[in-house]
Length: 342
Image (cartoon, rainbow, N blue to C red; front, top):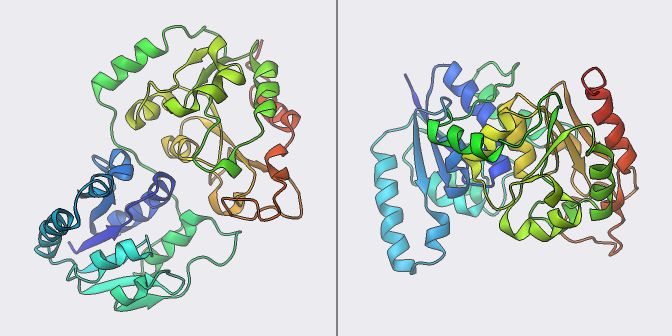
């Protein structure tokens, strides 16, 4: 069995988008080692798509001295080089992956033509650009690496690590207030990009429309508490600041629907495969980042400036955060559950 090193350090969403590639490599007969950072560890370690995981402690390195980091880098690199990989695939395609790619000692070091920040110089094999606009999804873009190796890419397979019993017990306690007979809807309204945030009043209108028909669960980080309180999350099961990635995987597996902007929560819910997902897009392209597959919904506005794929509005009006209108999301939810809702 030939060994392949898959390099994708961050972010959570992009790590998740690479899981179908890892599964294609595994199903094609390769033994996959995944090089990732702390942000991707919880969805890669223990995932059946990879035989081995190597963690690059990027967050820790930001706090350490350059000398200390360099020696730790050499230690990890030594571990990589002794595996004698047949191929290495750089899915990060940035400078921070260059120095792993360049010195990993793989026989074939594969990257794409649209790689950035001089990362192409770490490879010895370049395939055509994998992103050809906003219409082909990122998952399918990454699968071009498998296609280059002659593997089948006609199916998209998401897998996640098995949930530990302790996590299931914790989630049992977090969700013990659920009412029977009502569909379970998780609302995860926040993300790290300000321009990806849907207007808070839109969330509030959505919550008011759903609160009597559905079990509502709210998730987010500690810093998201003001937003979730404003939109009405305190009146329901509010898990803001109480969950990690493993917890969310289990929570989403028990939900019927997850509603979120273009975020790690959105992509994690899709990877769980069980709940329906409604993804709300403001500034980013749904065709590139939306939950891929049938039964998943990507909803955005129709402004001329959408999508811009920028963190700050180049036109300075931020109109995209107002769209889509709440009623459009309400209609999708009610149509999904029209046979179940009392």
